[in-house]
Image (cartoon, rainbow, N blue to C red; front, side, top):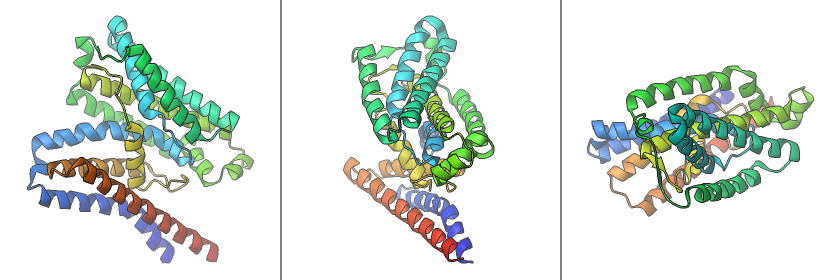
Length: 314
């Protein structure tokens, strides 16, 4: 019974948190939370978060970190945007996605074969790619072809996002890539001795994270109608916050569930949107978000330790 209780707590805590946040801001915002324009704003905010997290969750489930997603998003959007000026929409999409996959796989190779901690590799990549973007754009905004900008429609973006999320959910939940990623997060050495090609699946995980950086790069560039050197700033922190608030364990493993990134993304967006509607200052808003993240991570770790202790005592 105790084990079931803590398992239920781990699974239900993100949903409880989301419901509480929605109820609080429904009351404090005076129903402004549910206006049509505000709901459209929430959807536009949550789509890139969910898509970015759907790639990074493969890395996080292995107990690794990808700090480069924001800068890689910027590079993918920049190269794709420049390609679109000559190759149109197909070139825009293809270049953006290939750039994300290649740089993501490169991160994975460094982590897997050279044993460099993922935090160090991706942090260095974050700085390097941001510098490359600034060099390519010469620090100036670059405007896109009108045909590309026309993609900025909820009738296009929402169905595409839903299809991609369903696809990523299937890959994470029902294929070897997702299953072995969670096994690596549980215990890398045991996974290796069990015959899992740990290096290969690390590269796959980072490549998928890079792929979704390319997807979110497309969304970001289309949304602003051009390429900016600052595009994607702190995007990786937003994604990691959404994942951890949603209950993804910091150490990865079997507790990494796909639905948690969706729940966490909505929690973060409703929280940010509600604080804005209530006209809370930026400083206080960041303090509140940080405090909530600390509480959620603490509760997740506490539940995990309780489960582990119960397992050992059996």
